[in-house]
Length: 158
Image (cartoon, one colour):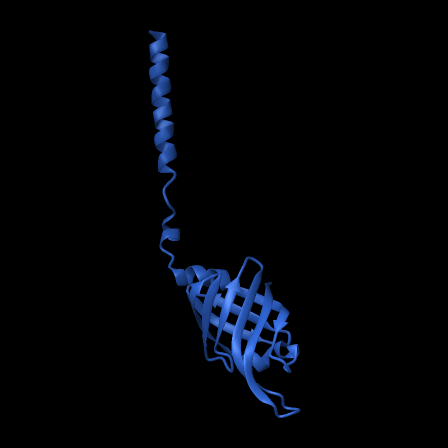
């Protein structure tokens, strides 16, 4: 009889543990409610600086990127909010603006409002690096030569 009572008690205890364990495996509701824009904005958000792997059209010096520092913020709901391009006046004019994003972290399109001359760029982001690329017209003020070309730079998360 005692063996049977121990078995019932053990079975009930095991059943309670299984039920409690399964109930703790519910999904976090905040994760399920994020949309694609919020997910990509979360990866892009932050401060990026220290330009490396600079690509410019032939005849355009890498110095056009200056000491580029980008700051992308998100609002309380995780949506893109403010953008600031610092120390790169040739590319972002040093002005603040806002930003939106579409795509994925492997291939995002960032559109800027209130920032010139570059008002959109393609972005690829990893945990520690952001690669931006864009087309931009240029003029060599020493020679008067003008053109348009592809620019790219890698920035590090700060």
